Length: 246
Image 1 (cartoon, rainbow, N blue to C red):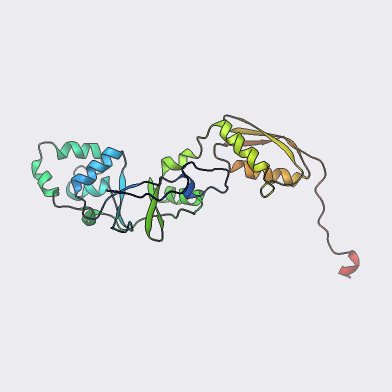
Image 2: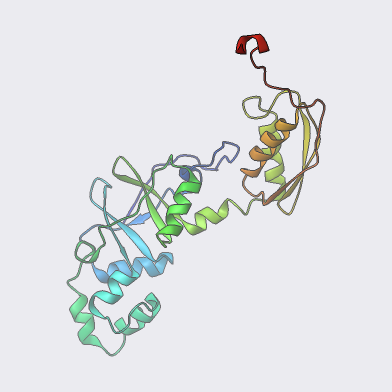
C-alpha cells in the first residue's frame, strides 16, 4: 500500500472558477502494488471503507484498478455482486478450501485494466458527468501517467454542502473582482439555505445575467433569485450607416 503525497491546496479555494478536479479530489489516495495479495486488498478495502483501489507500480504510475467485484467474482461466483462484508464472512467461515484457492492471487492477476480516469485540471462538471455516464463511484486522477489523487462521488457532493456564510463570502469576493463581475454594479447577495437573492443595481440588463451566471457556479448555491434593477436600457449594437448599405 502506498500514499500519493502530491498536494494542490490544503483548503480548497472555491472562489476560483470554474471548479476543477484538483479543487475537490482526495490527494492522498490509498493504492496497492501489483504484487499485493487478495487478503491484503480485501483488508484495505474494508479498513478504508472503499470499494476499489488503484494499482500502481513503483513510479506511482497507474496500471489497473481492483475492487470488490474483482475479488468476489473471481473465485466465488456464487456470491455474485454481494457486499465485501459477505465475502469476508465467507472467507473466514467454514469454506477453508476457498480460502486456500485465493492465497496465490494478486492484484496484477485480477485487476481491471480498462480504466476510466480524469485529470487534475479537468472541469469538475465534465469529470462528474463521465463518472455518472460510466456508472462508477471513483476515478483515479492521473497526471502524466502518475496517480495524483482520486475523485469520488462523495468528493463531488462536498461542493454542494458549503455553509451559507462561505457561499456569501465567496460571492462577495467574486462580485468585487473586475475580472469576473461587470463594471458599475452595486449588487448584494443574500444567502439562505443555498438560495441566493441578488439585490441592488447594474448598469445594463445583460450585466444581471452575467452576475447570475457567476453566482450559480459558487459551491453551495442551489438557486439564484435576481432582484436587481438596471440603470440604463441595453445599448443597441452600432451598425454601419444606412448609406453604407447602398
